[in-house]
Image (tube, rainbow, N blue to C red; front, top):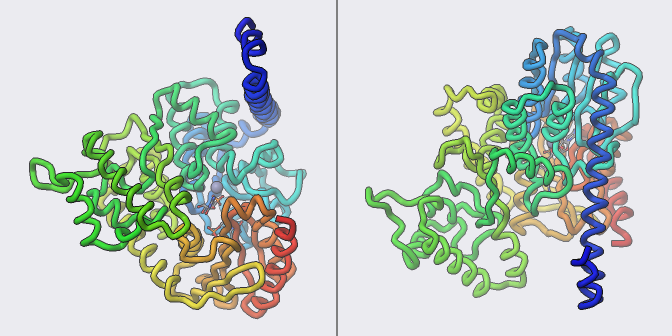
Length: 506
Ligand code: C5P
Ligand code: C5P
Ligand code: ZN
């Protein structure tokens, strides 16, 4: 108390700032406590009914967060004595819901999806019991045969930034399971992979993500360190780390093999005693500093108006799992989550779940898969660079047809926005053919944080697809839909108008 009084006497202005920070902190922690209490109460009320369901089907989304969510659900329900089976789907539509129904389990648990399709789920799975753990925008509040619906937004969290699907599964597990420290740590680890996979850590953790990371840090699950943001610090030789750098793109270096090598050699000896190229983790502190100093110089020297933005993007919090061996794809959370995305988006989601659960027998396949995923992304970026972009009033549209897989087109569109290959002032809609139905197209929408401040709500825009015989959903910053080809033009007009309305005051 004396401390506060001293501040009042000494410096009124700093006192006001200190009080503001203190009050913000208090209201933040009180908010978190209230949310956790609600989750606890809801879980405990549903616990008996859930416990009676011996056989459970888990339905999850195919990306890193969906695979992580599925793995948490599988681990926790098996630990609690249930039998589990799981199904990973590209999206939750009538066909996939029908497939889930055919499993005829006592309980179907939807993870990292479901909140936007409560009506559909309830109509199809009439006699089955249902539970939803999700962070997407919900379509409706409640439904009679849903035993439990834990949704980030309905609980007062921003599901695009503050918590992932895997985070929701983890929070449920804290109150569903009897206390088991070893298991809780394993589940915290998986929750972190999911939040990274959904790109919620790119600008630093906030909200419940931050809380989960703090628990995990206190439990020695994860170490957090400020470092350069680039992908592959554990596994890639440094020339590859920099040559493949896209977020941010390094002037004169990215995609230029010779320049990259010359740049590195001008600062350090890049080879180790066995004459192999060092990885970022092999560099001594002073070597890493020389390289980062060189990078900063490059950004400043080639300043085309965005050096500040690029320099801000260059450094971030990085996360390492302390139980994983250094130099593997599993030590760095960014690399681990990319492995899962590679699995999920190239039809190897079972390998992804197995990897998390602890079965690493299939590692050689995974390494090839990762290289294939990288090549697919690089080729797709080349395609976007050369493509004609349809510019409307408030959106830009890119038609990929069959040239980019529908499962990776969203990732590619996000990368192209990040790398400024596309215009960062308006959202992008990337269109590919729907591989399951040639009369439909799949659309992936991506925006930026700045657009969100200006009012962008891509999920609302994608929900317009229902009026045109499609189905969609997602987050404000990243959302998607399926749309009948014959309705494409009308739909794009409606989205263009809708997004214009959303951002008109921004
Ligand atoms: O279905 P789910 O919520 O897991 O997917 C979220 C998607 O949104 C991911 O593909 C993620 O990469 C993307 N995303 C993004 N930019 C953000 C946040 C999320 O592209 N800032
Ligand atoms: O497929 P894509 O990565 O573009 O998806 C972005 C977000 O939109 C994800 O959170 C995904 O779950 C959601 N989405 C959806 N319904 C669709 C397509 C995507 O809810 N039909
Ligand atoms: Zn998710």
